[in-house]
Length: 125
Image (cartoon, rainbow, N blue to C red; front, side, top):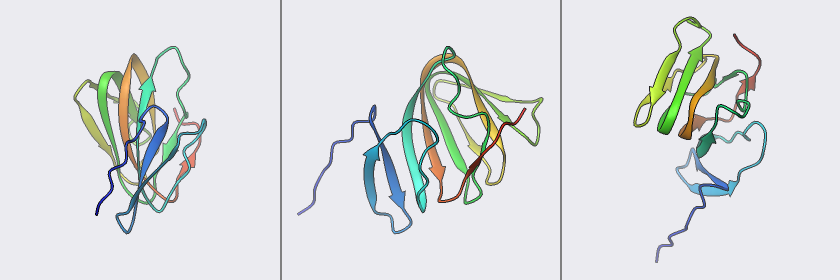
C-alpha cells in the first residue's frame, strides 16, 4: 500500500535523489544544503529583504526558476548587462556552470529546482 505525505511548503523543501526517491526536510536560513539530486523549494521574494545570495553556481546541472507571483531579474555573469526579467507564470533555465544572482523587483513567490550535490557562492556583479 502506498503512502501520501503532506508537505508544508512554507517550512519544508523537497529533495529528489538520484534514485528518484523523494523526501522533505525543514528549510533553514542561509544557503541551501546540497544533495546528490535536485532540491525543490517555494520561496517568498521581497524587494525589501536582502537576496539570499549575491551569486551562486551549480556545476552538477541546470537550475529551473519559475515565478509564481511578483517579478525578478536573473543576472548571469556571462552577460551581466542583459538580465532577464520574469513575472508571474514565467520561468527560465540557468545552465550548469553559469554564475548568477536574483534581484527581486516585486514581492511574490518563486519555485526553484536546484541541482546538487555541489554548488558555490560568491559576489558577482
